Amino acid sequence: MTIKGKLVAKTASAGAAALEGAALRSKSFAANAVESYSGLRRVIEGSDGPVGPDVVLAGLVAAVRRDEVESDRSSRDVYRITRARRRKLGLISFGAGPLRGVASQVVDLYCDTAALFDVAALHSVSLSDKDAAAHMLVVWGVLPDSHEAFAVLTGADGRNLSQVLLERASGTGTMIGGGLSDKRSAIEALFKARSLLAAGKVAAGSGNVKDVVFAGHHAKQVIRRSERQLGVS
Image 1 (cartoon, rainbow, N blue to C red):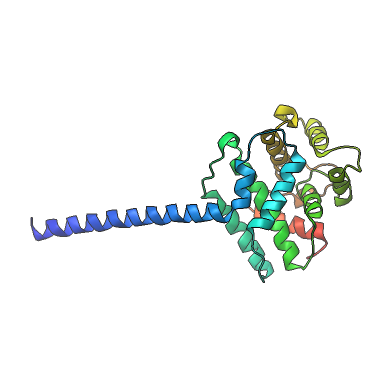
Image 2: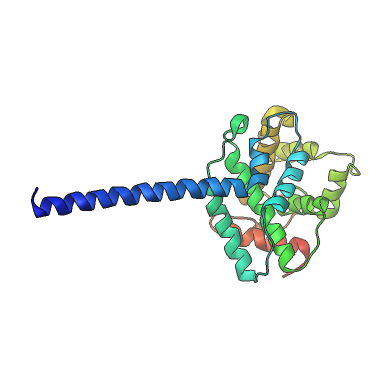
């Protein structure tokens, strides 16, 4: 083999080794990331049984408490972390089992919930699980204020969250399959409520359209809505 041929072969071999190393690092990253998000994985990989949206929402809150690590941070850090979290989770493949197809929806709902906790931690606001769940329903535009949301979640309102979501969907012409009788339909109902907010179809009394979560600057907007909801800036 000529010297030129040897150099070409050596370069090709080095390139193949680099690609293999990158693939192994990517695989290792994905495995470690999936493990570090064990709470989120529980929500995604759970069985598609008779679970209502209130249980799904409680699961998201519990997942954030389990998976996220609080640390000293600035407002800029909160934005950076919120944006990076969604990008990172978008690279992870979760084995969704019977809930295959809604994993990305769960990830979006999880990231919004985590952003609320980030804002709360930044401003030293203490949240109970019910508080956090109620605030998220307002951030997503499902209900106009946390008092009504808390009443729905605790049963004091006379309606449960399934009824609220079905009523709201009916009022906006949105189709919800399954009648919220299983976990998949509950996840889809919460995600569609969030999507309606992103499209500017805000529930009556839930805020101005200009404050809605628009695609393209979602991280900034969900942080802004969380700040407004928690009464901080």
